[in-house]
Image (cartoon, rainbow, N blue to C red; front, side):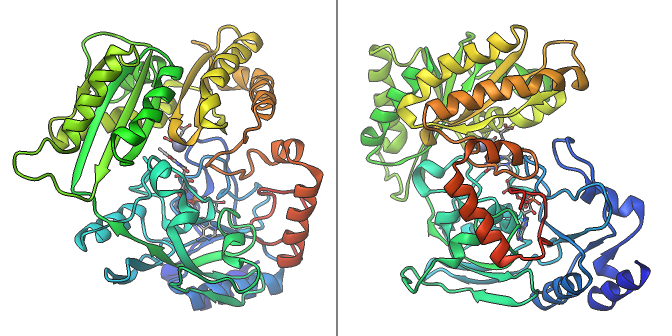
Length: 474
Ligand code: FAD
Ligand code: 2HG
Ligand code: ZN
């Protein structure tokens, strides 16, 4: 294959090619350390033309391409398989912000721009790019679009699909589809853009995007709230929409088990409330209307609302952030859930969704289902309750190593996913399918849906070279 690698070098130059084992290593395993693959080379093109030339070469030589952004995905979608015959195509050199149009509320970027850089650039123009997730310091917009990422503000702004107007894609043939349109309305036939969003790199490589911007919030209220139950959390959220004048931008539910792991593993983390409680909500309201002199603003409204909720027994205790630093500390308790679970030991994740009003019943039945399979397991449910999206995770019993837990893990997952189906929910709300849930997708999706998906994949990638083995077996 040395001739092939030299052809790659001819396209991307020395800076764009990684062939030594130490250099390749960070691109070959996933964030959760569940998958480790091998690759002929890591290819890092610097432009759409270079991506297209690399993909054309791979198509001609029948070499599979695994697109990769920040490599923070939760389902192994960016990890090559172990045969070492694919290349990893990393977008991390395509990291330029190409244009900001504050008047039209858009930003045009290359796919490898880190999400936090986009948020900061929008803020510099007094605008907001609302996609927000704990991996924002390292995930890329290309990866966010390819996974249709969710995060903590979906209930107000929508998921990644709703935050983008146009995209440019390098197709499996190496041709470039320029759908980089900044149009809010465009009913000209099938929506090709929506095909590539959430396709996890199996239909093509997103190289550029036109993103939507929003006005930057000027008044933000954040509260850390102890609630008696998930049912109380859902009722609290339901009333908050009107009480905040439709300004609820985040509503995250957490169980005490998750908080204990954060306090144990994350230096500097502290419990905002004096007493221990079983359930917590992190509630945030944001408005673009600045708080005027002498007004209590959103914090005043939130305080009044939480006071009423306390009288109704929906709230047990609450702390309203008195500063940006305190709000950040509340958020750190939520955002360090994944990191602290990773540090604690083996776990399995169930990124599920049901309708918001069915969260309480699902929680009860789901916890019972996990414990029926393995009474000593340690469930850590948390997540985006406003989207009906729970991370219904489960830590291994204390003292168990990964191989032992993985023997029983499939039975726990099957119990959870069967219940999700009973509730009319989804087995992957926001993380995607990757390689981790290929079998589950095939099992839980209907024949018509699977046949249609396979027909699309075969039509757009007949040689099955674009991220093969991910999402669907064809
Ligand atoms: P990667 O991991 O590199 O790739 C993900 C998938 O997209 C792969 O299938 C890959 O092949 C494909 N891909 C990447 N770039 C491209 C491209 N340019 N064109 C085509 N395909 C491409 N996700 C959420 O939805 N919500 C959350 O709240 C959330 N929180 C997280 C918190 C932590 C601590 C971590 C580690 C992850 C979290 N994630 C979350 C998962 C992950 O961050 C997101 O899925 C993110 O969108 C992935 O971006 P990435 O650039 O790292 O993509
Ligand atoms: C989050 O909401 C992410 O923090 C990660 O989606 C969830 O670790 C998880 O299970
Ligand atoms: Zn999440």
